[in-house]
Image (cartoon, helix red, strand yellow):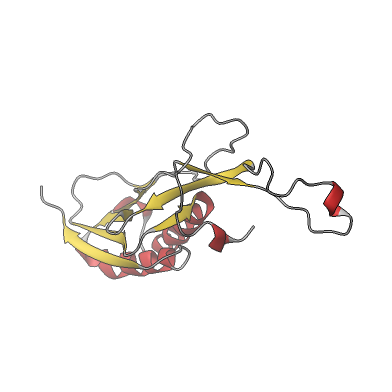
Length: 165
C-alpha cells in the first residue's frame, strides 16, 4: 500500500462509523497544552490544495509539532489543537504478488476490499492545526507548524491572527 494511492480524494467517501472491521482512529489526543483564556494570538496551518490526509499522518504531524514546542517553551504557555477528524474509511483490495498466486485471488471480482484506516478530506482553506499562544512565542509556533506540514501531503500555509476577546 502506497500513501500516494490515497492522497487524492476520488469517489464517494465511505463514512459509516461502525462498518465491520474498521480500525480505531490513530490520533491519541486532539488537544494538548494548557487551556488558558489569556492567549494573544492563534497560528493556524491552512491547506492550500484539496487532498486526503490519513489519520497516522495527522498523528505524526501532531507529535512532531508538540515535541518542537515542548523543547523551547513550557506546556503551560500554548495549546495545540487538531482541527480535523478523519471520517472517511479507507478500504484496500489486497492483491497477492507471488508465484502461484493466480489460484488464491479473484482479481477485480468483488473488489470492495477490507477497511485499513481512516482519512480526512481537506478542502482549500481548511484549518488543519491551530496553536494558541502569546506573541513572544510566534517564531517557535511557526517552526512547529512547519515541521508538522512536512509530514502531511499537499501544500500548506501558516496564518497568524490575533485573538479578539
